[in-house]
Length: 275
Ligand code: C2E
Ligand code: MG
Ligand code: MG
Ligand code: MG
Image (cartoon, rainbow, N blue to C red; front, top):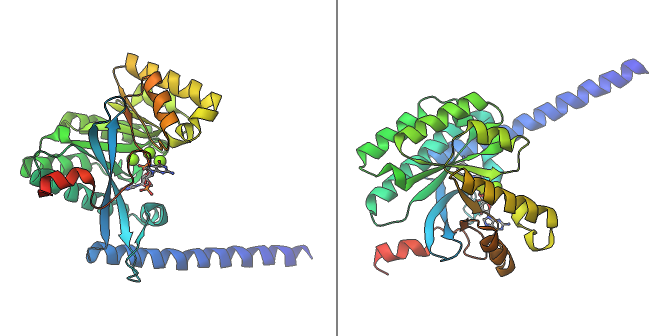
């Protein structure tokens, strides 16, 4: 009976593994095709100064055009994890870097743009150089490029993340710790990762008006960041009551559906297209 049981287990494990492999293959193919055939598109969402509500900068958020040509786009949560596992994320991150630096070069009056870099790219020692060379080649002021790194991704290797951030800072880019507070060692990060901006995770912002613990956390985070000479952003701002609290707590910038939704044709671009 016990032999039967373990046989069943083995069979089950094999089945799971092969199903997983098929899934991965499919996504790998889609990602490969998207890289080869202009299958990715960037959406942009505004980050606003909390008090003046003026645009501070934009965040570029990647989407994949539906491979079935439905005209819809697929969110990054669907394909980024696969790309991270296969290593294709490095190519995706480079594509985003190219697109955004080109855009900044084309529109010198445009606000700065933030890009997201996967933790998988930290150990790619060449990436900060790649960014610097492109900025120089396209004659874009480095401070117009902001780089967001997710804390949970940095968790995997603090020393790589530290090196990565130091190189980016040396290049003159602005560095932001994304999803701050969502990981388990946020405070260790603060000590080792020298970021200019902390983006407080949406987890604490979503229910801010009704959640006392979140209020305590956000308030303390804003005060601490201020004393450390860092700026703060709150993501997932969905209503006016949250705006009011964030202003009261001294959170510098806000981002969320209450202000605007990510779009391929953000209003901040229209000025430059003469619309
Ligand atoms: P993130 O960088 O933390 O981006 C914020 C996410 O929250 C975005 O989802 C955005 O659409 C969503 N969001 C913004 N405001 C609100 C709001 O008020 N309410 C709610 N419920 N959601 C809001 P998105 O675009 O699906 O991106 C998800 C994640 O995928 C990003 O989280 C980022 O970690 C990753 N990602 C996005 N673009 C890229 C990219 O170009 N490269 C890499 N490596 N990762 C990316
Ligand atoms: Mg981000
Ligand atoms: Mg975030
Ligand atoms: Mg997030």
